[in-house]
Image 1 (cartoon, rainbow, N blue to C red):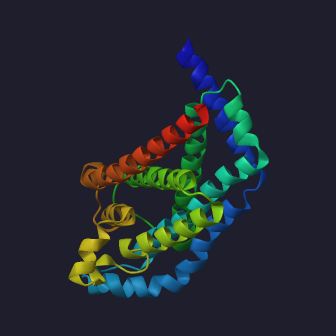
Image 2 (image 1 turned 90 degrees about the horizontal axis):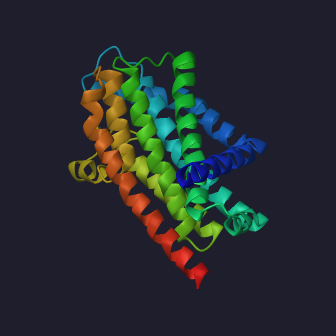
Length: 260
């Protein structure tokens, strides 16, 4: 019975946060449309890079669309951070904490909605890219979706971690921009990792964007299936676990401070 009660309260938090996001969907819509506006400018450069790597019959969208989708998904981490600080400013979060809803359910509900936003945004960009620019992965589409879901979980955890660990919204937003630009850049959002010098190719593996784009690249150009991208999904899982641990540590510390 206690588990069912907790699940009901978790679902209530999820519904509340979805309603809050739907009140102002403009940021999510902008971050879903802007990547598509960038594709015509990025496509020729990526085509040249892919041809230099030995690929034939490519247009450049095979790298440009996922690259821009990944980059702008990092920017949307800001919406997660803003949702946390906005609800503190409104007094909504303290009211929820004062209610009978467990704090863990509150955090999990908000994190789950953040995850949904990330996943929907990236999948929307890929879907519209397929309709508008003819993006056609040669591999298993289910494997591609699973990669995006795993990557979205990493970014949702990143947004929650930044919101919990930073003292102010401005610092959190600044850090998210810096981390996002750096991770997307070294991960291959702006140019193929194969064009990097050897030392930079090694550094690129420190970014979750590298593993996501590596898997998407395999599905798009190599015809990869689920089994082929499991190593990349595993690496994304490691990033998620690290960030989740940071979230739990800080959440536990804050909970302990409030109980004193």
